[in-house]
Image (tube, rainbow, N blue to C red; front, side, top):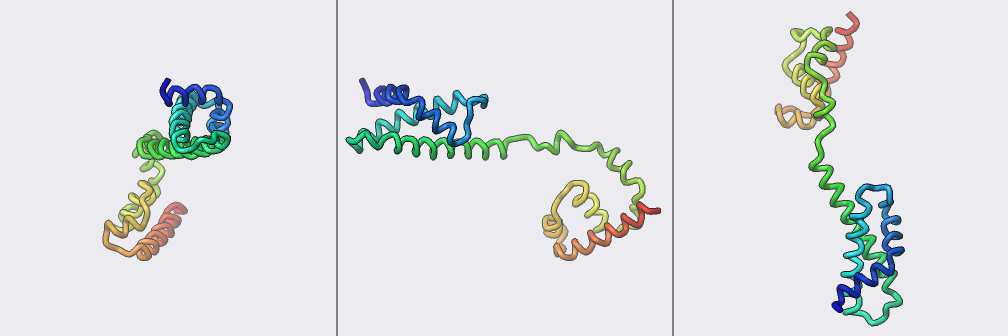
Length: 164
């Protein structure tokens, strides 16, 4: 029998410890991928057992060692999964995008002719497309402070136009 098989047998005898690790890092049975994490933890347990037996003779401290090792490794896996989903998930904005006709209908009170070029840019790119003023300042070679003043003037004009 190989060391890894012995590690898997030891892991199967200590399933309660593995379930405890999963519970500690908030992976509960109700998750759809619980079995995947349990299987991964079992494999990690077996590998840790082999490595521990090669370096240590005293198995009395193994449970504490493997509990901590599993907790750290599974936490790393959760972080990697979260990072992956943060990068590869579809943006909510794509599904909730308001049709342009509705935006223009809501902005009927705006007299575009009264706005300066920079105010038009701020209205479109800052308020509608939700880009930060810092990014717009870099793009249009202005200071962010200057764009804040321009934004405040635009807001005053829009308030005045909406009252008419």
